[in-house]
Length: 189
Length: 189
Image 1 (cartoon, each protein chain N blue to C red):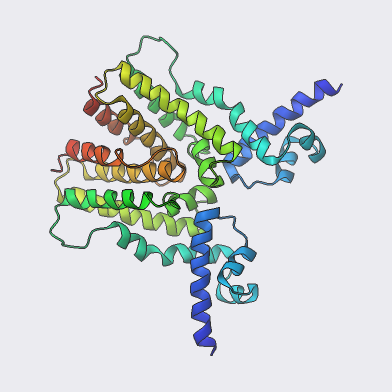
Image 2 (cartoon, chains in turn purple, cyan; image 1 turned 30 degrees about the vertical axis):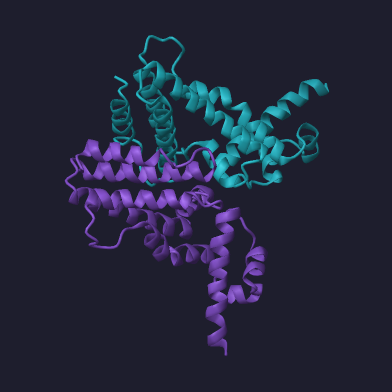
């Protein structure tokens, strides 16, 4: 019995932590998380050492879906330039949702302030993987300076999604010409 | 007597709110703010309707110093291109400080989540003024699309400062070539 119930409570807590943190911030209370998950505080503390631990686990749990929602399939016939542009087309599409609040990993790192926090470290690793994707495609596409182009692309990713997330701008008509300019200048045709 | 004491308490509260919010986030407690300012809670609530009110006032109070630290003097002989680059040189210099955590206004908007919050609205207006500066210089410099260039520049400003603020990157060697590429493409020589 216990083995059947526990994974479900765990999943619901991970889901609640991801959803509520994204919507309300990292200071969402344990009570609210447990209530949303339909799990007692006692059960939560049996599954996770602390709220920080739950937060880090919830970010980690979403790694695969975050990557799947942004990255093109491997060896799909697209050129490196098209593969890079694909990521920004996905971001533009995501930013159109009414509940879009920008990149959840950037938000967590900005909110926590403490970059040694386990959740900050999970967020940092996930974004470093996206930067590594840009770096690999930049090199494959013959960029004059793949390191610089990768840094520029993740800067545009974070800047555009943050600004769209706070409603200061939209991504439409902004991100595509910006990325194209950077790709052209780097010689990725 | 009261008239002499009150401005000083107010100033100390504004300073504490700006400093502690930037370091610890918008959820910093009233107790911590009052303690840092050396002001009683009773006095605080005589001066400000609420913590939200104090937060909004502290952001507003810093508008002039934020602008002075970033913008070139009016009519200083610099070209529009040089005036735009000046802002990013200042940002690069600011980002070198060990306590740099990115743009305080972007952070507040990301943390509050609620863009109708009075502090979010103050932050939004301050950043809109920076965008308007970019827009005016872009037009003056003959940009092919001044609106687009202004949106790109504030995107780079926010993206680069956010990433430097969380320690994911530095601004050095990144922001200057990116801004130069955007200026060149827009025809601002």
